[in-house]
Image 1 (cartoon, protein in one colour):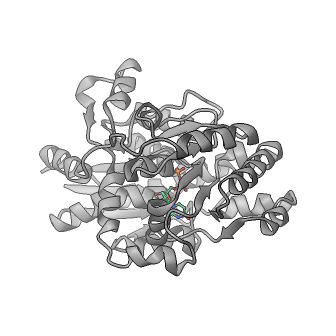
Image 2 (cartoon, protein in one colour):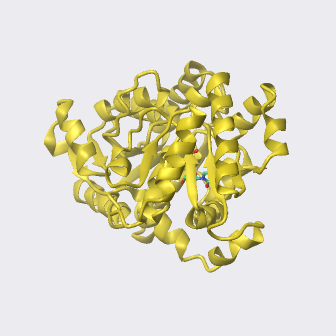
Length: 362
Ligand code: UDP
C-alpha cells in the first residue's frame, strides 16, 4: 500500500495527524504532500512540530490567492507529483481548496480518493467550503463519514452505501493525543489567564471577514459579552481576520476594551484555552466540534452549521453576526449544564481509516 496524504491548512494538519501517526506506527508506505495553502509558521509548521509529524515529502508552495488561482495552482502542481509518486490512494480531509483540487487531480489520474470527514453540509452554496466538500464527496471512492448523520446525507445524494464508512471524527483522536502533554495544565496561567475566567473567540470565515457589516456586528457582540460576563475575551486572530480588522478600523476599538488580540496559537496552548474557557464564540468548524467534545459551551457566529450534531446535543447555539443575538446566545449557553454526549466518536477514527485502507490495498 502506498498512501498519499494531501493537506494544506491548519485544520487538515490537526485532523490528518492521527492517520499519519497510525501509518507510521504500522510502517506503511506513505507520502505527505503539503499544498502550502497555509504557509506562516503560526498557521503551519508549529503544528507539524507539536503534533509529532514528519516533514512534508513535497511542498507545492501555492500560497494565497483567489479561489480560482489557488485551486488551479494546486491542480496543476499536484498532477506532476501524482505521476511521479504513483500512490495507490490519495487521502484528503475536510473542505478546503486543497481538498477539492487534490481530489480532482487524483481521480483524473485514475487514482482512488478517500475523503476524511465526508458528508458534512451547511446547505449554503455561497460558502466556498460547501462546494469543496460536495465535489470531494462525489469524486471519492471511500467516504469516511464522522457521524451517522453525515453518512445519511451521502446516501441521500445517491452515493453508494458500499463506499461509505462511519469512522468518527479524527479530531477526537487528536485531542486525546494533545491532552497527554504534561505542559497543558500550566499553559492557561502562563498565558496570563485564570481557568474559567475568560471567553475565547476565533473568527475567519469568508462570510464574516469579507463583510464589514458582519465583522463590525461580531466585534460589537464581543464587547457586549465581555461587559456582561466581566471577563476578557481572548482572540487569537487568523492573519486574514487581522488584516480586515485593520483595514476597516476595527482593530483599535478592540485594543481599548476587554478583548485580548493574540497571534494564532499552536495546538497545545489553543487547546488549553479551549478546555478552560467559560464559553467559546467562533465561526470555525473545528472549534465547534472541539468545544463540544471538551464540554465547553459554544456560540457559533454563523447563520448555519455543517456540524448540526453539536446543536442537537445541546453544546452549541447559532447566533450569526447580530450583537444582540450573540449576547443572548452567550447567556443561554453559559447556563447550560455541561453534560451533553460527544457525537464525534471514540478517538479511534485514525485506526479505523488505516484498517479500512489496509484491507483494500494490503
Ligand atoms: N486552532 C489553533 N490555534 C488557533 C485557532 C485554532 O490551533 O489559534 C485550531 C483549533 O483547535 C482547530 C483548528 O485550528 O483544531 C480549526 O481550524 P480553523 O478554525 O482554521 O478551520 P476550520 O475548522 O473552520 O476549517
